[in-house]
Length: 444
Image 1 (spheres, rainbow, N blue to C red):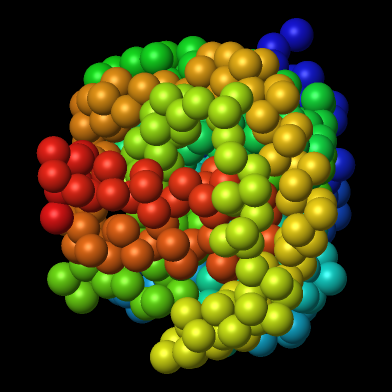
Image 2 (cartoon, rainbow, N blue to C red):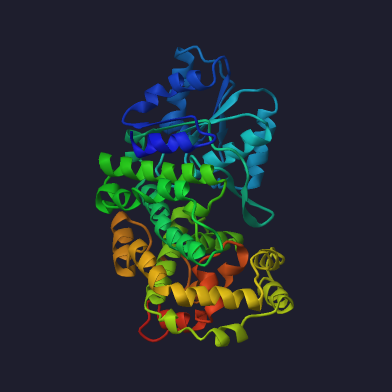
């Protein structure tokens, strides 16, 4: 049995997934199997309606599936913002039709949350292998100035036609490849959290994401060129990430410090020449940043860590409150730093124990991380080959801003990552000096 079929058994919400060439023709059959006697409503934007939505409307008509008029977003600058969820919610309140999201990240997330808020399941037809959210639990939506993950179920059924995905714009495929590549650093972060007894690895979720990951990323050139096998592997890898998140009801299996970079930039309303930067392209730079940090971690002799020196620089809870409120004082999310860092704060005594564990177990931890991480230069070459950005300037981030992000990103999520290791051991400043100093990767 395939990895996808096995993972589907572990999924708590998605009951059916079809991936293959020409399978868009099976959309009506899949709908009838999953939602017998129900009406449908196609949800799309103007682009995805032309790509697949219109043909699915006709297909449903031919197969006697009753439909409400398609809901088509016409805003050319549509992104995953709560106002667009509210628009769809208002439309869905007038009937009980099952939404069929035809699109990629934005359309899927908007439909996922709107379906949940109107108390109904939904189905998804993917139009690009651009991110891992298709089958994920939760929707990533910008609300009240901050990118937030809203708890809501994954689609009951999902269909991905490889012919459609292979013909998607190359930057969307590159975005998906980068989002999948991020599972490497996310996995390393989970290894750290597990080794330091912060958050144990869930073997099922780990296996779903990681077992075929390196193979799915093995052909960046073929992926860029829309090769059937490469796009199929990429699509399966992205879907598996979603299933792992369903299994654990958390994004931990697929998201680490590299995603915190992306979330922070969204919260800061970062634009590149006035345009939103895709999630995958933000994550591409975040992944390279964290990979560079891991390269330094692996060169650090933690067996000789000066624990007392690290403890002296560790703030009290009151000092942390001052720091975390000061760092976001001028933003529209002033409380998040305190909210998230206080949730993961540990006392000096607990930190001493944690650092001793790091010191005692470092050879084993180092071996596990080295096996997981793809070295920086190789990661950069692969991402470049697929067409993803490899320098912060490619997405409008200055080197100064990238350096600041290493400091600020740790404050916005309670999840333990390499950034927390850097702060708790007292190495962050030294590592940033190496990355941004003379002859560093991003010399200022």
